[in-house]
Image 1 (cartoon, rainbow, N blue to C red):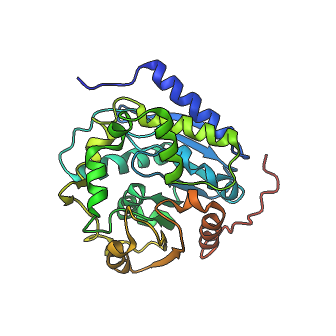
Image 2 (cartoon, rainbow, N blue to C red):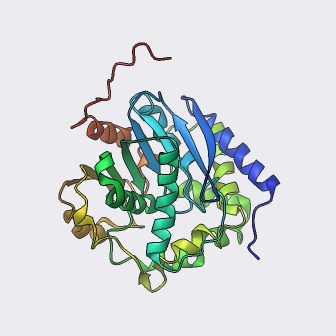
Length: 321
């Protein structure tokens, strides 16, 4: 029987998410919706009359961890950040698929279920890491609905993965974290993705949320099991590289030059196969530029969103509440 979170553990995770979002200088609201019998959690920020920007996080992450760029983006877009099935504050239903294609479809359909429930006919889309691969899958399914596609250090292009990453993910970060004291966890997690300009209270809120998220039971049978169909210790098991040439959506790919999780050299050939994609490298950034250099990253995002769209970032919101 799967080791599922108790109600108290869910409540604690939600409280820590709320505490983290309280540090963000824009209003962020949390919601839950049932999709195919599973609870999918998502966040909203920005004026709903603005064009929607859908945000998809990476492996082991959560919608709330887009928070470093929410203040910069919210004045220009209606942000909808989704917790993929098996991650974040979404339910931990056991993954019952048998392949990488099944895993990507599970995550893709969870996100699309939220968008359908919200009645979004057109949207911009950004995905980070595994979320970038899911964003590619959404573009393959509904590319005609997407005005701008942004991919941050995305999975799905590479045919190879560095051995240290294969070993790390095969061992499962969520299980490894249980082997170390909380102080060690905080130190390692804080050093891995340094976020500039944080207050002591902000650092504590982030550490508390990430710890609660990582320690939540149920992930092994859910999100982590699905991810194991994408990447194993032996290598990349599933990729979208053979399909990306079919994506004609206007695309900007952003990549940290020091990304050791998904090195750019493993993805460049796949990126080049996309007929309307441009690559922007971010000097000195690692695997999560939206957290490491949030202002620069947000500037690159807004610059791209302002191109080729009927509603520019300085849209007239007169008469809105």
